Structures are given as structure tokens and as C-alpha cells.
Length: 308
Image 1 (cartoon, rainbow, N blue to C red):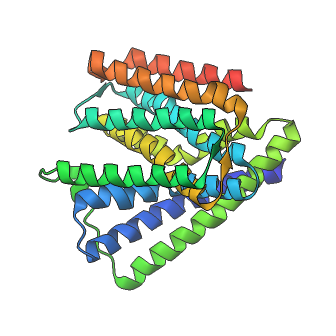
Image 2: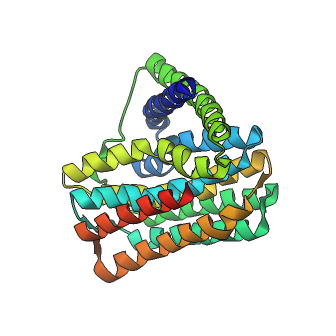
């Protein structure tokens, strides 16, 4: 058991540091190629910060543990809204002051509805996965051409230029850390599930999902303490879109991924309900207050207790 916990911790550490170095190296390369900061933020950073979830889901699907692959995505989306936004709002209320937020919220709901449809379909086939990935690419093109504006402070920070050797080292080392970390995390998670007789779906929805979302949680907490909690809202909405369309899209292109019937019956509809509740809260109140954040965290704790 201790060995599994050590492997789990080591896997999370490698995923976190691997993603960080990969993103820095990739941003430097993108700047070298002359990509605009907005496009770098949407593609390089978006995919880079989702690499832990992508490699964990891909490795799980290839290793015959599809419940962990799907649970990782569904659980991450639930944790992103209830846990990450809940904690951030508890620290500092979140105002919805993000340009084009309504557009991105609609896309998040579209992705959640697609996930619900995949639950009814029972499997993510190659052609369905390809359609999901093409939809994401179309959305990124739309965002790129519709967001004609001056750079935000966050986008200005994307102008990173490293020496060529350091750039290559960051990218190669980051990818290596991600691959090794994903392997350790999946091996540990499946071993823990078997040892305690817990289903792989529950492990994917909780331990794996929260583990791969720890970097986003840390970033959101720091932003909230600095009174920039709205950063967490933008990150969560973008992450939830990427998780479904990019992670499951790419995973399904590589190998068909069956959807656990129990997850399709409760967890995926719960994810959609949570997404709808977030959109309703933003539209009605225009913010996520501290009491709302406390309720969100409480709902997440209750959900996890119910799973176990």
C-alpha cells in the first residue's frame, strides 16, 4: 500500500513539473515561430496544461482501464467547478469580468451535452472522436478571429524566449516527466482500486481526477489570494472544454473507449447539471459569492462521500 501511495505521489509530481516545463518550452518555441500571444494561450498553453489529463486518460485506455480514462475527464470537470471554483470563491468572490465569457460558457455546455450523448452511445468511436477534435479546432479558430483586442496582462506574460538548448531540454524533459508520471499514476491507481475493492470508475472520478487537477487548484488559490479570482473562472471554463473535446477526442482517435454504464447513468448527468448550475449562477448573479463557494465545496464533498 505504501509503495502504491509513493508511486501515486511521484506520478503527480512528475505530471505537474513535466507540464510546467513543457508549457514553458512550447511557449518559447511558439514565440520563435512568430505565433500571436492569444493563439499561444489558446493552443500551446491549453493543450500543455491538459497534458497530464491527456496522458493519464490515454494510458488508462490503452491499458484496458477505460473507466479511469472517462472518470478522469468527468471527475476533473466536476472538481473544476465545485472544488476549484468553490475554494477560489470562498477565498475571494469571483466576478464574471472575462471578455466573451458567455460564448465560452455556451461551448462548455455544448461539450457537456456531447459527453452526455457519449454516455448514451456507450462508446467513443474513432469517427465520433475525430468529430469532437475537429469541433475543438473550429472553436479555437473562431475564438482567435473574434478576439481582436489588446493583450491582457496574462497574455503579455506568454512572451517567453529561451535559448535553443534550454527550449529543447524543457520540451523533451517535460514530455518525459509526463509519460513517466502518467504510467506511475495509472499503475498506482489501479493497484489501490484492486486492493480496496473500489471500482476503477470511482478511482478515476476522485483520486486520479483531483490529482491531475492539482496544478489548476494551486493556480486558482494563488489568484484568489491576490484578488484575481476571475482567473480561476476562465481557466475552469477553458479546461472543461479541452477535457472533453481534446482529451477524449484524441484518446478516442487512438483507441475506442467504452463508457461505464454506471457513470453514464449518474456521474455524466451530474457533470452536466453542475455545468448548467454554474452558467445559471453567472447569468443571474453575475458573480460567485463567498456563500455560493462554500456551498459548492460542500456539494463536492458530499458527492465524493456518496461515491465511496
